[in-house]
Length: 316
Image (tube, rainbow, N blue to C red; front, side):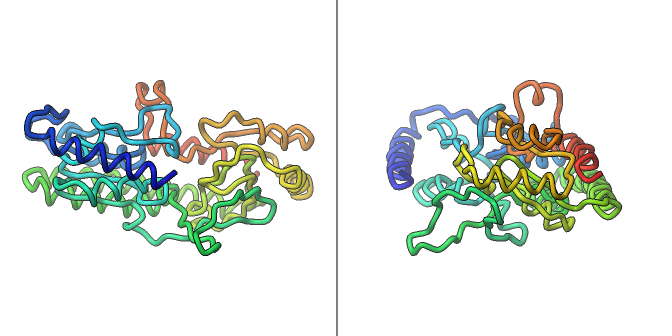
């Protein structure tokens, strides 16, 4: 399937190149930095740094599942005409390689989030329904993409984005630098709040009746976890053994909360919670937000503060 998608993208890119001289793209000529981010976290980081001084676009439409995204021809045109293109860099972004390797015109600067921080392999822990994601030689080699779920990583990524913006637009460097200092201070405070919450908690185990895109988060704060599926799993129905295992963990450890993630129907979490008396709460991975949240000004910080409140209850 990936080879088919790559061939289709190559054909689309070739057509766009042939039509470029006579066609219109969706870029503006207001002098602002044109920045394209694939998903919500880097979009919001750039927004906090640049504010009204940048022309910022998120490719993933509000409410869309990030793992199902495929670029449209218009998206490809806008990427190649951008000043700064920010993407995650994992397996779900394989389409980016096709664009960057095939197109003669490229963004002036490109940032892959996974190149900004140390990465870890996506792992399958006890009890998980893992599916059949294997490499050609049969070994698990997929890196965990969800680097932004650690506020510490978010600080590092934000500074990398700010540096790129200042290099592209030195006239507004002081503004970008000041905004980055202020935003980094807020992220540092968030990090300290998570750290204090975990350090003072009686329980340091979290249960997810869902996918688990929080490896960097739990590693950062020393939390243990069990979950129904790995972070990028396409599985939707856990095995009976997985359900039984998670129910047993909730009962034995007296876990008060079973987590689900955003855009999940919560059925698996509810199946685990009902026989144990646990409550189902949401832990937002920040991949994307819905249209109402976007309209109401949701940010990475506001979502993570909701996570902080729910985590306090889960660790009580």
